[in-house]
Length: 628
Image (cartoon, rainbow, N blue to C red):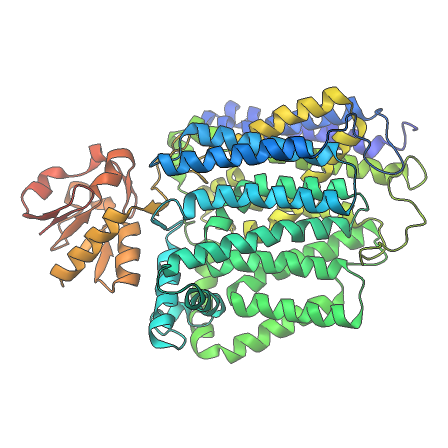
């Protein structure tokens, strides 16, 4: 391969190295050492990916796809997989909080999935076997939180959506309990119908957790289907699905059973439809999926439109002759959005401006600047899985550029005669490069470090893109992993096994996905309520009718599910923070380990206990106290 052909790849590699050095060096030179520390999770992958890409550039490739250096009877890793699953289930039953050993066991599961994928010859059976193991691994991680603990609240929206579902079950009609959610009740109706099928023995929030886990399990197959429509090798599709279930956002949204999480899977289904052969039936399905996205979460469609427009621009830049996103798709999306907004105008348009303002310029639910500024090493430790994901994304993008540079006649893994995929996909060409461009463009909007800095410095909240951009991250990262397997030997596979095990251990043990027992704890609230806390809330609500002050998690639960007249305490008043409230509710159990989120986070040392001692403690369950 001539040097000139690869010159764009070399220039980009040099630019990545320069960006990594400057991204850490400039803040350090300006005395912003905390931002420099935080930037390490981006800098290290930007340095490592070009070096690895250059190291394997001369590796051997095959025209037909992946040639694994070893072959293992799939029953061996599958048997080990099921033994580990059984052990981890026993661990969940025997422990109140997931131990670190559980995370290590999950890392072993993901490693076994990787071995199963790269050592089994491609075929229909291996495809089904691989997807089955990936789905089981995902569901174990998701349900080890949502079904293991009493009430998963996530970023607190789940309290409202559960209340809406329960109201539908009680009244038999769509809910008017919370006007802000009246315009998108498709998920609530779906969850209520599931609750009716499961019966009274299964709580509504448990039903939504089961449904959400099932949807994200289906998402594994959808990511595989999308990959297969862009590349002929099934190994790539399975590796892309593996990267998807190791991505922390995918795991968290699988736990967070709210409408916009479900909509993210509908968006992946839309991408699969767009990547399929454009028949009349597929066009109709596209319209149906766009309508489903709009109805399920109307405020989501602007973000979806932005990503679709980005795909269209990337396709024009790469010269793709059969675009995934054309004028028909964009016009259908805009028209459907406009029609539904008009239909729901009474409840939606009135609050649309406020919603857009809060989404784009309001404070993020999961991003608090104090954590970035005060404890950068803690934040960095929790960004480790994103660093691994970024490494594979950058590596995949470099390989895609190299693939385009060398052309279809030089060791190309896509035969030029394969004009149309046998699985119903469009003609293959620059589709994967388009995906790579979109993934790289979305990195600052999806990965948490840049997002938290944007929110801290400018108050711009763009984390909604994370709901719909993970598929591009999975495909591009999966391609980087695929090329490493394809070009490397046994040593490369073993090295990747270690890297993936570390990646997945970090993905399931960080504070974003494992707030119950993270390896490195951030100063934020726990993402679930214990049964004793919920019982205490109900007892207090039965005995006290006046307004009271409390933390944000408690107020959303009690206000939206129990109808209690609560208010979030303003922590800016310092020692006088409780003076404006006739009564105060505190989650004492949470406060032992974590700060409480009032208008700002307040830990035990900062809490004005002297003011509370002047009040009567009329209720104390150990986990919750109430002062009047």
